[in-house]
Length: 519
Image 1 (cartoon, helix red, strand yellow):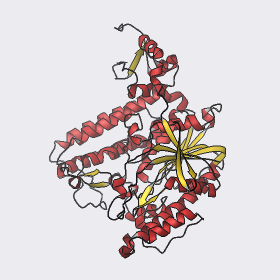
Image 2 (tube, helix red, strand yellow):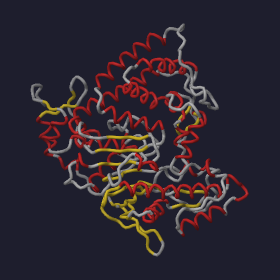
Image 3 (cartoon, one colour):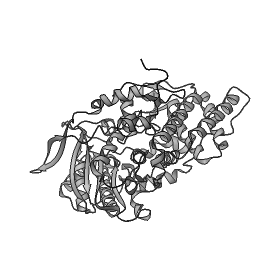
Image 4 (tube, helix red, strand yellow):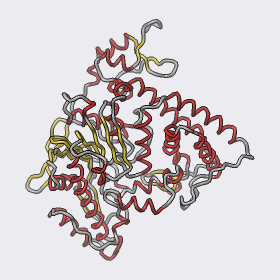
């Protein structure tokens, strides 16, 4: 039994005494690789010398036998996978759900922070000081690569065209410099404001639902809608804009959970997926719990990473990666870790419409249509009716696939293979533009890790990863490897529909790989 008088240490000091990085010790705790330890009055883990001695004696618990990994290469025109020791942990985004900062915003796509950390370890020169290294994520999403980069003391740059995802990145990057106490105090003020008004039936919220946000059924039931509008009433009272954005992001991350819609995986009515509508919900409790988690993560960041974060330079741009040369110096990037939209027409913009409109990020549908046309790969809906779109480069294998697509379901016109061939051609044209753009930004001998998966269009498998690698070489990059990360991934519900797929007797499994380039 540990003595109550035994000296205790916070996580950073304990990690130093054990001989590991603070974030490593934190993850051992979260992953259950070591038993939980004591907590102080604020709930933070504290370590006694006995804990430290025990962990040091069992550090082998953190060592895992390297699983088998498959490296892809082509032999006689066929894809061949050869086994080798794995240098990556699970890439699935689900691994982020318990981790500080990464857990703030649920996201349908992306990769795990463990995978990003492995990229750092595998492809960065350890003899170079972290403060002299810059990491780029051209499709930043909700900021996994950027946040992980800051936690490791690297400079980070990101581009994200979706305004809601951009808000997520911006809030995370600014939050590392804010005091958690400010957030806690503001949350207390919010609850006081809310509680005084929610029980007062004579109070009519000043805020109104966004005018141009239309849904087939009411997004919120009446009782929930009133509570949500009281939340909206409070937000302008927060004078500190960075703190206000934290509250906006917190609301954005939970707002669908008490609505009559859900992600399954695309935004749709709850009743369509067999769930009952939500007639009432403790909106303030759900929101306050999210804000408390965010504040808790900020406090822990101060403990673990405050020193290294002071010297870190971080930038996020609400821009397309195709405009990157306007914001970044040539040959300024040491490593790229990213995952572009897959060739599955998952419409990130439409699936974030609730957040875009209710957070007053978008007020004009015309602007959203402009973003659709500016996005990587566009969307099937934006190019399906155009004349046949040619490739901007030569690739015989891809050209034959596109010809095959165009011959399928010709009687369906817009919904037939010709429209999907246009979508695929546009996607790979943008792949070529992307590779050309990042090639200008990468330092000599730098690396780029692109997580991508295959897809199915009209029953035709497209090996996106292999084509991506070929296009990178056409654009001037050097293909180092294609590493199979997951032999099976979810996503069939996105592509196996009457609109997106044709009948096929061939069983195709969706997989995910990391395409690795060097400059």
